[in-house]
Amino acid sequence: MSEKSIFSILSRWEDEINATILKSNSIGIALYNLDGELLFANDYIKKLFKESKENFINPTFDTLVSIQSSHLMVFEGYITLGDYSSLNTSIWGQVYRKENKLLVIGGIDAEQCIENNKKLHQLNREILDLQRDLIRKRNTLENTLEQLNAANEELKEINSTKDKFFSIIAHDLKNPFNSLLGFSEMLISNAGKYSHEKIEYFARLMYDSAKNAYNLLENLLDWAKLQRGELKPDFVKVSPCEIIEIIKQESEPYAKSKNIDLQAKDHYTDYVSADKEMLKTVLRNLVNNSLKFTYKGGFVIIQTELIENYVQFTVSDNGIGIPSKYLDRLFEIDCGLSQAGTKKEKGTGLGLVLCKEFVDKLGGKIWAESEEGKGSDFKFIIPLRE
Image (cartoon, rainbow, N blue to C red; front, side, top):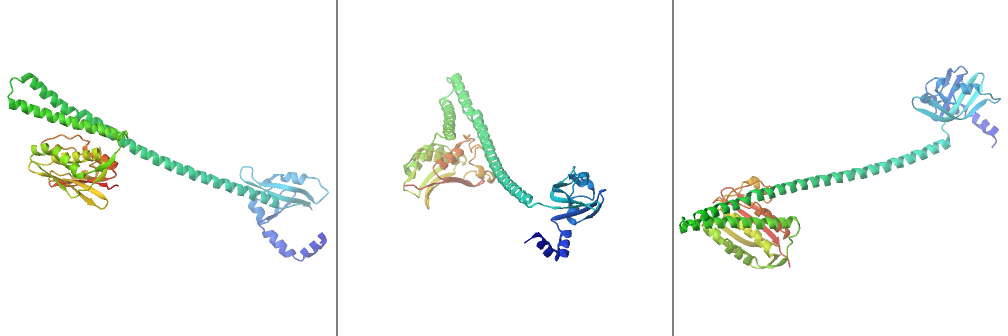
């Protein structure tokens, strides 16, 4: 179809086309006189710049006026409109000069639109990549913060453990040796003057101090091995009845010295897979702890029972009991509970901590139930193994 035929057809739609162009948001129309006065501008042009010839940035309005041409169209190409100091826009346009007037018609070039869309698409991809990268970095940062918090808590626990460790060494380990040195010095200086009963009394005090120091040192060495990961359980077939009988015989002299009834009730008579020495250490510490805090004429009972797939050991007493505020942290090194026994016995400060460490190594759980003035039940379970 020829250009003449097309114009002939379009002329029938002149009113509709004109109305559309005047209201278009895609095509701009502006009519100026040669002095730069704006005679008409549709909505599209009004959105791009103010009604001033100064809004022609490239080419300028004066350049368009000065172009010499024998054709009505004096310019075709990109026209930049706007303001140097703010946002400006480029459109593809044609400028016609006729009857001392300039007609500017322009809009977004199709290729320009496609290119802009490509740039927007690429920009969106870059923004998405940036968002993903920021999310990854945020997650990494959150994980790092969690690790730092965990490390900080671990460091606090290590410092607390270290402080407790040195406190025990500086205080509890020193006291027995002070007693040993004091009593031995008195014996050396006055052995000839003391009666046999007096010497035996001092010897008993020295023995008690030495035994307390030895127990403390043994606990310290075991605890230190645990911290270094050197103490690992050796699971063998163990009879709880035999272990309890050994501990009962070891603890009987202490129980008799305080006139405490030490009993064993074996409700579970089969075998269990455990580390024999660890199990002995746990029971020894719990029994000694109960004897220490039980008054003359009281009782301490060791018993076992089968509960589902676990063997439960219980050491019960009718001693002084434990304040409820300490029960949840009783097996932690920084528990804060410090009490002398009913005969002013000193503790090692690590006995219950070791109990928990060893029970954990055996795959079990330990806890205490107590009421002040009515006694305590120390319980721990270990799983049955083939």
